Each structure stands twice: as C-alpha cells, then as structure tokens.
Length: 599
Image 1 (cartoon, rainbow, N blue to C red):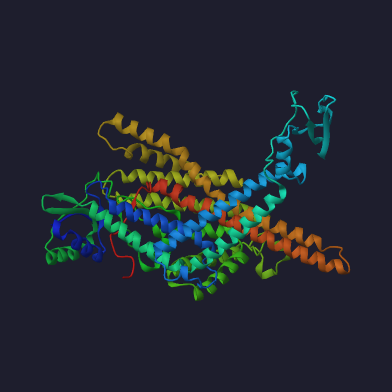
Image 2 (cartoon, rainbow, N blue to C red):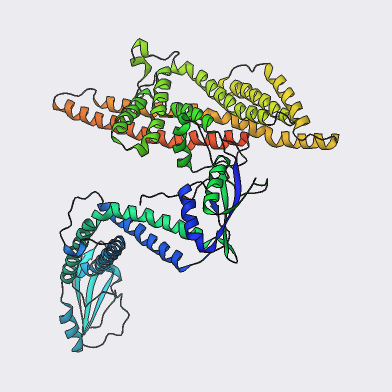
C-alpha cells in the first residue's frame, strides 16, 4: 500500500536551527525538500573528504581480506583521512611505476632487433664524425649505397631486415631509418623495470597494511555521508529575518508525532495535502510482513511507483516467482539453489535474510515446476523412473505448456485491468477496463490457436465485439456523440495491436525454458558421448573429461538462466503488466532525514 503523505512547512528560530535539525533527524520521519539552492565551504569540504574515502576504499578493497598486521610505526593510529591520503598516494605511486614499466617495454621493443649495445660508446663514435644510421626495410628494398659506406645486417624478422649504415662522411642519401633510444640499452631497461617492480611490490605491501583500516574507513564514510546530508539540509533552509524554515513530506500516520515534537520544541508547523500537480511527493510503501521479501526485487531493479500510482508488490512477487520457475525450469537447479540458500541462512547476517527468503521461495517454485515438467538437470524423460516422468511426453506436451504460458499472460494482464476497474468503479470509464479484459481473453484464444495449431474458440469473436463496444463507449465518456466515438476509436486502434502483442509476449516463458532444457541436454549428451567405446586407462581420462564438460555446461546454463530471468522475468512485470496497469515507475523513493550511524 502506498501511504498517504502530508506536505509540511516547519519554522524555527535561526539561532535554534542546528538543534531543531538534530531533533528532526532523531524523529526520522521527514523527507526533506530543499527550500533553496545552497553552496558552502563546509559542504564542499565534506564532499571532498567523501571522495577521498571512497577512492581509498576502492584502492584497498583488493586487500581487505589480507591478514597482514600493522608492524610499521608510520601506519599505526592513523586517522581515517590520513589512511585515505596514504592509500591514494600509494595508488598513484603504483600507477606511476606501472606506466614507467610500460614505457620501458615500448623502448625495449624498439631496441630488441638491434641486440645489446652501449649507447655511450655509440655517441662517442658519432662525436668523432662517423655517421651511423639505424635502418629497417624489406630485403629487396635495401638502397644502393656509396662505396665509402659500410652496411652491417644486425637481425632479420620475417622479410624485414634490420641493419646499420656507417660512413666517415655525412650521409646525404635517403635511408629507411628507424628511431631508437640510443641513450638506453636493453640491460638498462631490464634493471629499471626490476627496480620498478620492486617498488610496486613495496607499495602493495603498504596497501596491505593500510587495508587493516578498511572497516574503519567504511564506518567513517557512512558518518561523512550522514554529516553531508545534515549540512545540505542546514544550508538549504529557507530564511525570513530571524526565522528559518524547512519543507518536506511525512507519512500521514506520523502527523501527530511531529505535532507533539513541534509543541515541545517551539516550532511552528503547517500541514497540507499535496496538490494533484505536485511531482515532488515521495512514495512510501507499507506492506505486510510476508511481502517484505519483494523489497530486494524492487531495490535491485531500482524502480518506484509514483505517489499517484499503485503498489503492485504482491502481484509482482507472485508472478515473478512463476516466471522464475518456468524460465529456469529445472528441478535439479532449484534443488541446488535451495541447498545453498539454506546453508547461507545459517551463516549470513540478518541484513541479507530477506533476500535469502526470496531466493528460498524462487527455489521451491523452480523445484515444483521442474517436477511437473520432469526436468532434472536436462535428463531425457526416457531415462527417468516412471514416477518422475512428465505427465505427457515433452514432444506432444509442448503445446500444453505454450497454451499455459499464454493463459498466465492473460490472467496477469487481466488482473491489471480488473484492478483499474475496481478503482474507478464509481466512474463510467471503469467499463472500458472491462472491455479491455474481454479483448485480452479474445487475444488469448486467438494466440493460443495460432501458436498451438488448435481451433479457435467461437467465444473469442463475442469477446472482441463486447470489448470493442465497451471501449468505444466508455474510454472517453462524453455527451457529444462524435467526441465520444472519436476518442473511443482512437483509444481502441492505438492499443488493440499492442494488447495482442503483449499476450503473445508471454510465450517467451516457454521458449526460454525449452532452450535451457536443450542446452543442459546437449552438454549431457556431449559428455556421455565421450565415455563410449573407451577402454583401459582411457576410461578414467574420458570419464574425468566428460564430468568436466557436464558440470561446465550446467554452470553455464545456470548463468544463462539467471540472465533470462533478469531480461524476461522482470520485463513482464515492469513493462507488459505495468503498461496495462498504467504504471510509469516515475516515483521518488521516500527517504527520511534520519540518523543512520551509531554515535
């Protein structure tokens, strides 16, 4: 249920603004709307420190599980900001050393065809007037040189010849010269890279030590973020002479609590119902305890219904569980998920138990669907015991599953229109929702006949006729017959095809689930095929290889199943169902100003 909100303006003395904000934060019920734009040095300083800590956490995350103890006095008893500064500078040092190695390697590659030489000797020879050029070209492209010159081949790679041209007189002819660093040698570069690698190792050792502060940095970051929120709110206070005011929204159920606090603290406060065109009203969803397991889904997808929209948590959870089960489809996979979830529930902290409860339900749903369809790790039904076999053969039973997926789609979309019907039941427009419900069931019968090759029910045309009449007459009720029919026709034509496509889109549940079955089956057959005709020691080798192939195949298939759930399972709820429900997911999540860290 989306809670009713109240818009408030709270006024306090400017001299008491800090204390008032602290009291409001302790209440933890106000979603703040900034009264004015702000810019302050304190805000910028806190934000800068947050960036430093976040960067340091990213740097140290690689070493956060390391057990290196702090033995260097330079790293003992550092403040979080000192740790961040040391970690960030150490990271800069490592990147600089890595860039040095990369540059040296590029120089090394240019020197490699010329072998080892001493750049100092080479420069000394040039100072005595001897012209030395480094050249490279195809063998047939080596230029003709004057008699007083000397050419020496150094190396050859494929058709490319690397050679030097030496002359007592300055060379004036055009040569295929290459640029190399004559001040460096391969030996020098190897030594420099060795020193750089030692420097990287030393700096990484420093990061391992600093990583002992990782948890402290995370706690400090949370406090800084809380401090930033407080500073934003104090900078964003509106002001009139000696008074400050703050605006925002609170759930209606907390109105009396805020009134009591206002009386105790000497605040003036004004409550009002948000206007219809107020787009800043946040959405606060209150659900029964059993529906809390749907919250991780919405958090993961990052969607929130608008304040004037609907809370579909229950239907989202119910149908997502069905979609998950069909898309994964394998009772064996469901059993794996269930086993790991049960183990995780005994070892993981309370903060993730809600998410684990969700996975528990999804796992059980998958097991039940896998049992109904006799899908156990993609094993062919021919090899299953009689009690585990499919109710009908998979080849002939595919039509039943296709029809079932379309039926699920029709039920899912009908719920959206029936819900909208009940909401608008006192308005004639509700009858247009009844019309769309009839059209959806006509679409189901038509789609089922087209996809499964069965005869369409004669009831479909009556559903279409009844639905079209209701949509034409009640989509845009008006006493003007032309306006009424014009609006109805536009609404019908604009949405009729989309309605059919939306019903058909649920066939993806069958298609993706079947694809997963055949991927698993193919890897099984590939692995088992290796063990045929094997003798002696090769039996062990081929059996090990077959086991690897089968396990790898199923792990890959599980990953693909997870991807299909994200793409298809969530889409059917957030697009198809939400579109028929009129949901645009444009909401602002209710985020109360409250204390989030321990003192």
